[in-house]
Amino acid sequence: MEKRQELYAGKAKSVFRTDDPDKMVLVFRDDTSAFDGKKIEQLDRKGMVNNKFNAFIMTKLQEAGIPTHFEKLLSDTECLVKCLDMMPVECVVRNVAAGSLCRRLGVEEGTTLTPPTFELFLKNDELGDPMINESHVESFGWAKADDLAKAKELTYKVNHVLKELFAQGGMILVDYKLEFGLFKGEVVLGDEFSPDGCRLWDAETKEKLDKDRFRQGLGNVIESYEDIGRRIGIDFDA
Ligand code: TMP
Ligand code: ASP
Image (cartoon, rainbow, N blue to C red; front, side):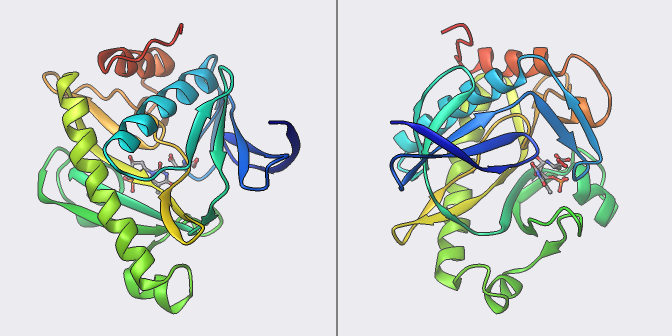
């Protein structure tokens, strides 16, 4: 496999073409962004930590029967993935109220949500990732109704697998965001799963361990990401 020209640079990852038209290389950078790119900082070791974290989680999800774009780790900060035709939509499941849900609905942070909520957001920084519903996705052609239904089903399946995994490490999976795309007609999980795109609290103390540490200026961001990883069995020195 040969890494070729850069296709796209996002806020935290860059994507490169390869000599195989069906595969691309994701490069996890140290850049850390919040508030739709209004706060950006470089955090030492973040690229390596999130790359290894994502590889571990994607492998667990694949083992649980959830199709993902992840193929293999290539280096500390790079992995090989399948090229997906991405839906420009973010699928968010919440087990506990936090973040924008609390602001939007005036709900107290920490309220348990039974059953978990499912929300959709349009991926568009200029518009601030507005919340949308299933009919918008269909009417604007962002995805076909049955592909969106599959993405929703897989998003809930991920909840089942990861709630249990993090619980075993003494953590609560508060919420998370997933992105899906199509590979040869099949709905496949793309992008990444890392502490950048979910909320995790210590089950006892309710301490925030995820990117809210960066958003809220709580400090020790990467140390906390590594702590999350170690609690679920990730060896960042491997
Ligand atoms: P929110 O509370 O800001 O709506 O976010 C819900 C979850 O989704 C939280 O874990 C952060 C994640 N998320 C992203 O990773 N990127 C995004 O652009 C958005 C809107 C949410
Ligand atoms: N990932 C998004 C951004 O960079 C939203 C966030 O995490 O706050 O701005």
